[in-house]
Image (cartoon, rainbow, N blue to C red; front, side):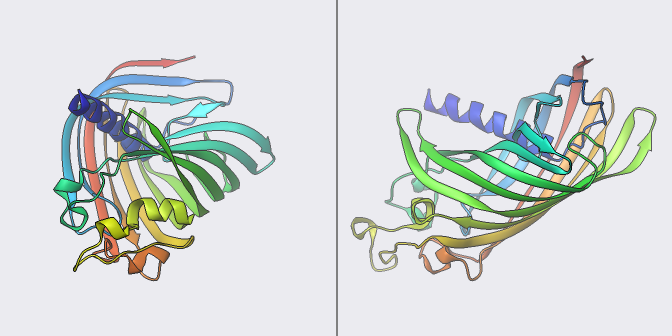
Length: 279
């Protein structure tokens, strides 16, 4: 049962992650767009940032994409548009972090597993170019997200993650109903001590000769940059992403669980669309 739940959550995460890099068609604010389909996705993702071990996923998953003037599945996984004043937008965004079985990670051997982590919170975006539904847009952002961890039998409050961000999306080639686009994002991340201790803290009970006790303070938790590419047609979608995470000089960098101060995540996929509707 647990394996089935994990597989379903991973599938949902892949849908959201790959749609994050899928630049959607430009629509008027009064128009909503919905697409359904099926796809095959591959990703190589570190167990946690700073880990020297990663997990590879190859999954057939359903494909879903939705966009309107109130809601979108985009690079932040889920965005609800709450308020707008000229170029300033207040959104509600969410993200998901993968669970990790500590038996599968040498650095965490004997420690508690890392549960699924769900984050939700506001994002204040200032658009320098375009607007949320435009084919091309550039914005600067300040985000804050509350994080909870769960194994689906209980929920734990694990603090906050926050920081500034920049995002740019641009179409490179457009022909009829087809489009090839690029998306760029850069984040400077900060987190509360509770959040960092969830991933990087080591209690006296779990310390040993090679893994000393450690507790983190709140503050700078690393930076990341990513690029996504996609080719979108009325019937098919192809895309991929590369994301670089940099942890040097971060608060958690001294944790014995941080085995390297950078990580690279990659992924790509293809999907066939069998239902599209504008309404």
